[in-house]
Image (tube, rainbow, N blue to C red; front, side, top):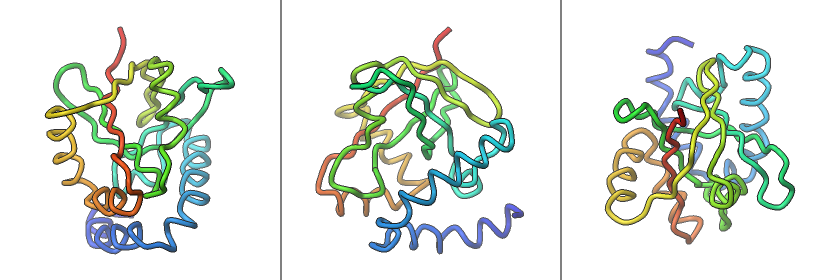
Length: 164
């Protein structure tokens, strides 16, 4: 899709993402589509990337110790090493997503972003740092406020910083 068409459709998709129907269907469909597109394009594309920048995060399972893969919307950061902000919205569900618990236990992870594999360290943001990041995240995906309201919890925000 052309960028102009995506720009025109983005408000519709943001509205759709905030609906109760999407909260039930989205978690089953969107991550699968993103994983398939990622695999088929050798990591260069993810379906959701047209609407919002999207990465594939590989964490270590907190209980299993096995690699766990999750497609996530992100906000790439240009300064200080080019890290990423990611949000544990879990589509507005009441519980935190598994990947966020995995990062809390083992902060070392890997990001696949637009064809690049990047080793990262995840850090949970709090206080003023989280508030500043949250305002920037809302500018790219205002639906996060609706997810906070629906979930009834403080949504986790992480900064993924590249490791040397």
